[in-house]
Image 1 (cartoon, rainbow, N blue to C red):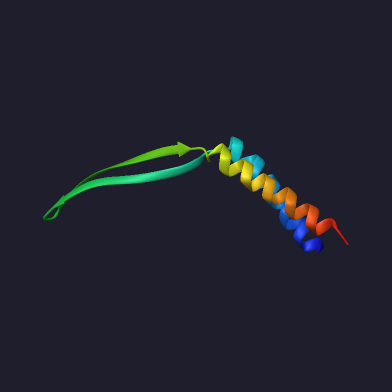
Image 2 (image 1 turned 90 degrees about the vertical axis):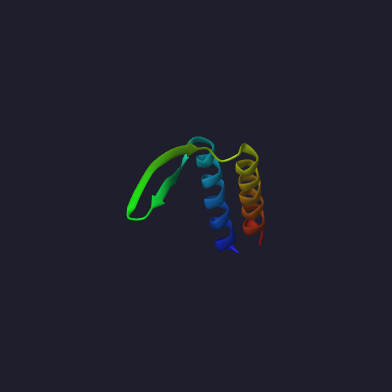
Length: 70
């Protein structure tokens, strides 16, 4: 049961970090005609939805509560 507590703690920490740290995403747009390839690469930094972060935190807290019971 202690393992469930530690996994829950990890989920809580990841949920809190996801409020602050953006997730990088790269897209490639290109046109290929014959042997010629013309392309551009764009990079976006997006944050995780606050709802998803809150669900991860609540799930981690509930796992910690269940894991701490004897």
